[in-house]
Image (cartoon, rainbow, N blue to C red; front, side, top):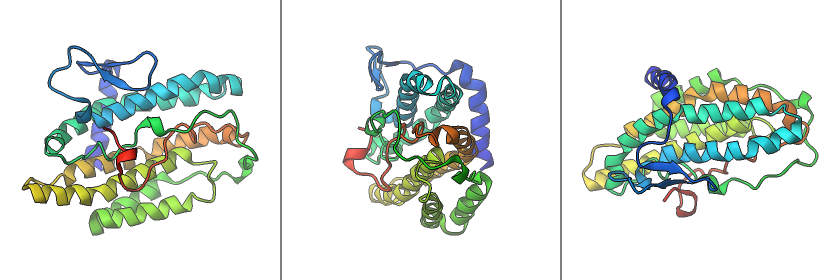
Length: 265
């Protein structure tokens, strides 16, 4: 956990330099990152975490003005904070993607099968019908959640972590209109934890060292950002209680295991 927090602290220093990596650019009319003519060594499939974050930031930039119009500007701080955290994580994504390259070249899709493309994000809707009252919102406890999942991993590895994450997701099922960022991170963490055993078996078949370190790093990064997720959920809850589905409709549904229709190419 300390190592992952250190990575995020280093990302703070790098945030000012957070520009597209050499050979990559963001298309003007699309949420996808595309290769430029100068791209050489790396291919899109070797930058899956970076691409996922850039797609997410692009989508939230596109929707920021629409939410601002609906809320009289009250949502703007939420959108800006969300985009900032996504951009902030990109330097960390460079490191994660670099760690994954050797496995990707061997056909082990660590990172690429862990993140669902933003193309699966629901279409924009202005309001939900029959939103729950704000009085029903109860802030989540990210420190407890993080300790529970991390403790489960330490005692029983990824299988135990997956069980713990599933329980935390179940706790949020009664409030589908709230806690959308917390739910998103937990669903993503569950997919990472579940996929780890798949990559491990594939590496053994190919005579490669274990990719579990990459999966563990991604899981740690998710757990380290639960506090930020809880803050975003608290800020978004009053608007969600008005029926404005900010955040909830801005993330894709995440199946607990990878399939070809919900993975990066």
